[in-house]
Length: 391
Image (tube, rainbow, N blue to C red):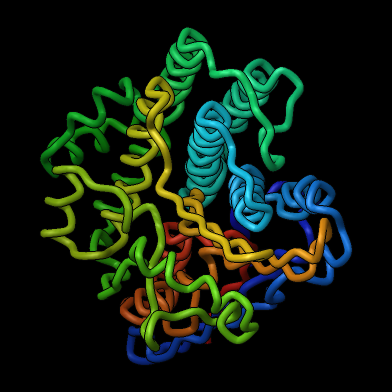
């Protein structure tokens, strides 16, 4: 049994994945992925006011609560025909950026040590959680920026610069061993190898472990990213429970992860060497985290997002830590009639999706396959717990 970074007290709505591998002659011959996640959340929000529903969202979903709140308020704003001011949207994006860094850190500092046989690094998580809490308390001044039409004051640039400084210190101490800006200067695989060999952080030791095991290309498979235009075109499909369980685009599965939205010279070289596989995926997470830490000081920096509405209906999508998160709402007066959520896990852990395709390519004895499978699952990163069974 293994579980992703889900804080205690998670909602039953989040469900769980059952991942079963069948092996023969030192290779995986079959992959089955089943989910207990329930499509849609209409029953939970039925007859709730918009304000009550939006205040419930981050409490119902313990993972990526800011992203859930952001997608929810934007969908409701579209349905209500109201819009947020530039300062409010900028603050939402800044809070979403901090949350995404926190989610990446949760995997790196708490999950990666376990996969390496080490002790989870609680101190680094304590630091980022305190920074996230203090930043929100100061910049929001008691207001909730995730309610329709709420106006907040523009964030003081000096506050963002101070947040950037503190975040950089946390990442240098806990993840990179150098400043995020310095790490982003790594362009050649040999530079990455030399950094990993020093083993000064758990991230370096993870990269070194994968390289030393010869697993750089583990889970290599073909996958197509979920494009922004595709995300915007499927709003009506969120009313279909079957689509919510197993989404696709014209019958084809899509991937939406940090790997599909992150680019750098180092990543390009790694993908040329190893394809869409384990090592490039691990480095994509590190790269995005370093890049996002720099974005805090740029008020105009915004996550890709989209929204549109018609009548009393609204649809929005935001880029959460694990991929595209989509919300659809239909209002009846001031109350919620229907509400649906499509999380990135449904795309990435579709029975024929990128996780299934990557796991199907694993080779080795049972112990090696199990270790690689846990690394590949962690790299793709479900937002719910999972059970891995190998026959």
